[in-house]
Length: 298
Image (cartoon, rainbow, N blue to C red; front, side, top):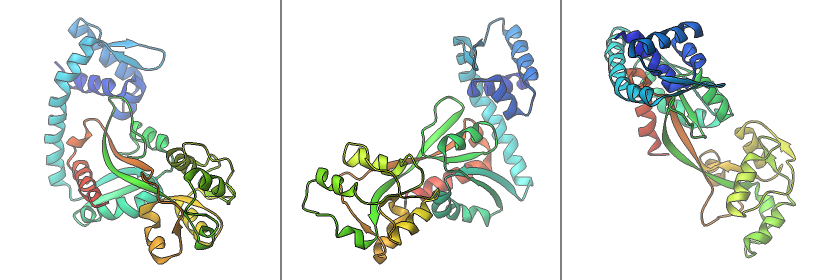
């Protein structure tokens, strides 16, 4: 059986789409369709059910993918290991949220850079956009705050991020710490809010986890970067919800204060995501492993 046909089949199986598989393989969609039809004729069985959007594997298709994919991935690993040894520099194309990437991911990859890895990072605030870019082949690795679905992706939990409700010290005196949480929520809603978007994604998530309700107000300041939100809050513009890793130095210096200490702090999980099978690439596997090791201390 032609390995090229099997490679195309496995990519379609993982991508769930002839169009997406063609983009990842660097082929035209008609070429991918032709290869799948050739393989189906050779086997005498249909491998996919064509649908309005994408394809769904038949039971025969699932069985073939389960048997063939590990061997194809192993062949890629053998080929790429030889290439990795011949080439002094390999490039990792990655994507992630700007603040977390700047503070955590890029510093963690620096030892690999000194060993010959080149890094090209795309900074994106939207998890869906990050995963779409990974699916399209624009990135090799992604750090995302959403768990992707489908066989195209392999996702590994990287770390949890604690969210803290903070403000400049002058706002803290307006809250009565002895009051029940519900009453403090009412008092907090009278204060100005600094956020990254009009939809209040961080404040809404915090309110839902801590107060089991939605925030009633709107933002006074919108800045689409958490570092800008931090600086605005520290200057006294209002309250904000920030990741602890980002605001910890300012909490320690007293520029910011934590307004609440809930029994169970709100958390958000980061995932390390690659396209299934690509961890056979040595330079990608090294970066993946390095980030997982570094995250143990985060």
